Image (tube, rainbow, N blue to C red):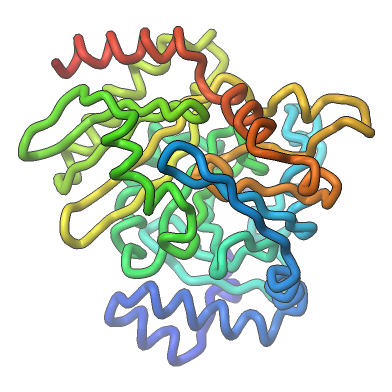
Length: 337
Ligand SMILES: [Zn+2]
């Protein structure tokens, strides 16, 4: 990472000095919108998006028509394509105007030029290394605490939503923007099965008919890390030995009660609708934000076409099937029961 990549604005540096990363990030965004026209158009585009919402049994899923996300939704992430393109998260390939903030040893926080959230950042490893959660989970939870005053953290696995599966990165976006953050407690009460609960933490498996996920809640950082490792090992048993099992994560830290980590379990990258011929194709490629309740399509005709039933079918198809979820529950109970 070249030193010229790091922002040197005095106000930002003063905020970083007192470890106010949230306001430093806000300042960074403001300054970058002035100096970097691509970013500014990305945010201007956000004012023209269309949105609608569908109500399910006590929870909400929104749909956003966002033209700016075309590249990300339709990104080709097969090994050949990845090998033959320049990595767009490596320092030497970032736009010259793009500046960032150092966060934790080893990461830089950058403004995302294709925003979905009102404020949207990418947190990029300064070293080019594969997107992988097992070795980076501790960083994810640390960063989520540092940014907890304003942002939620996101991780997309290399086989289900990361558009740079070869370069480790997280995203941060405006807290409480994804409906699942608001709906979490009612989802847990209505559809959750407790695996483990004591004064230190809670593990719950939730199936709301569309999404299948595990939530980990605790205020003990070491415990969280240990639990995640054990859960990951169990989930890996379902894997047919081809790298990281398919998962997306939304991670939040709350001052009052600690971390809430939502791990979406997946069976597919995209549903069959994505692969239909042009006319019937639906451009929706679910990753953490979509599963969090903000589904994004860059095609207006798809936005018009998608109704509650279709949305349910798409999310349900890419989520882990019920049979495998039962296996996970049984194994988790053996491990933690
Ligand atoms: Zn790279």
